[in-house]
Length: 116
Length: 115
Image (cartoon, rainbow over all chains, first blue to last red; front, top):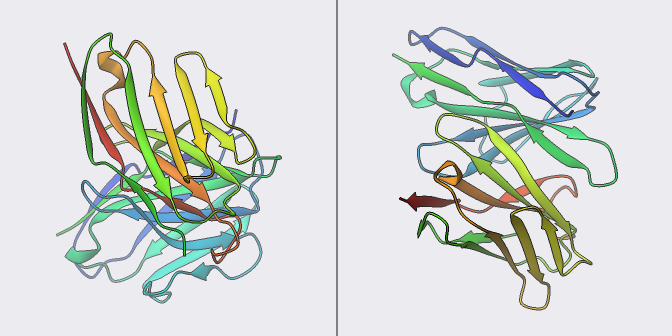
């Protein structure tokens, strides 16, 4: 149980285009999902906390107009990178919070974004 | 806020035990996790420990928590080549973090298992 999927697994786009990444909890409902960014050989950096039915909470230094987050249902959160530029190229990972006693985060497989 | 540190690299021979260490700063942290990341993949939850526990064992994995020293370790017995990956220590936010549900990650330890 506790499977989280992401789509697409990788995407290559031209500079200036927008890219949408989906994060789904497949076998549980998640009122809270998290979006992380990971640079090569580095740790995960929390970008934002996504709560179903409300606005996302962004970490300091993360542009909310650049990284649009929508958590429209209990099993789906989306991250849209708007007007992507080469510096947005990164590995984006989502996690979904399973609300049992441990409040454990289960992670998706990640999406590799390359902006040309 | 919380600060979590790990050593960057560890090499062991196949069949030996691996011990990956992690230190953290927030004494009010509640849950502490170990995740495994293979190349190009997301994070796989390996195990976790609650802050009122000293030790937890799950098959080849043993987690030790020294709350006084704020030190967490993951021991992998009989390490195999398939265990080669990056291992992240993650600590659930305590009082000093902005959200009690957020995780603070260490930098990750690259484990290399030599034949």
